[in-house]
Length: 348
Image 1 (tube, rainbow, N blue to C red):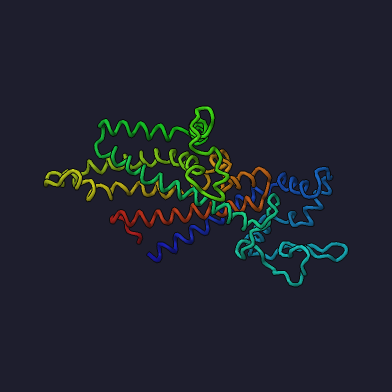
Image 2: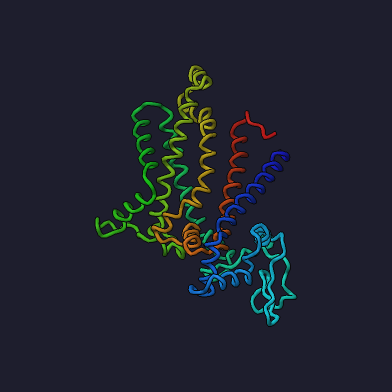
């Protein structure tokens, strides 16, 4: 177990470094840096003034060196003006340069400054991630039990009327994008078109006070798409288990069909869906972009759109770190859970 965890931890760190470095390179391309210079110093500045601004603010340094600064393993850049004023990455405005730390990156808890929101990136992500966390938790509480129930019921008797009905429903929900189902739900349940104003078409008020009225439609919109996918995987796994030899033996020994399903088939049938369920967490974190934008719920996905649309490099990098870590951690939990559910798998 210790060797497995060490190897997985090493792989996670290497993967995180590679992915974040790739995002860092893409967000720090020359056109993006030029846009930052013009947004901060003026849209009509010349190319020479752009180059001067980038030099004074540390953007002209080699990409690998700047990535090390961002991580916090390389000392932050400094610049001395003609009047002797010292500025730098680790020197807050108006503070004494002699008292500033040499390192100020992700490892030191300094995620940078958002040019759009005019706040520290760490504070923005903490708030927005918390809002999306409530949305993700609500979706999982609805999506997982419903999808597993549908999949198990459909897979218990392959080819039956119940199986065909539930499978059709699963395929239909998976084939319907969130922006389609979301618009339909708003039109039907939250507009004057049908007169059924049971819910609110906007979830902005849920940012301060979550209620069933303002939060159910975005939760249902996301959950409905995931329900069909997990249900199909559960149904396929359940169908395969129900045709196994030990299931037939248990039935021949006189055990009831219900006992066979609950005691013998269910655990083995949940092995494959468990992995799929764990993969829903990174999907939810990044896949809520459309739903949060549609329902004006300013969570992590909405923040990611704002960062990308406004060329907010530090905020975009911060979002990428969170997304990468969620993916890697959920995959680790998925591997451990898979080994626990399937005794034939040994971590060593």
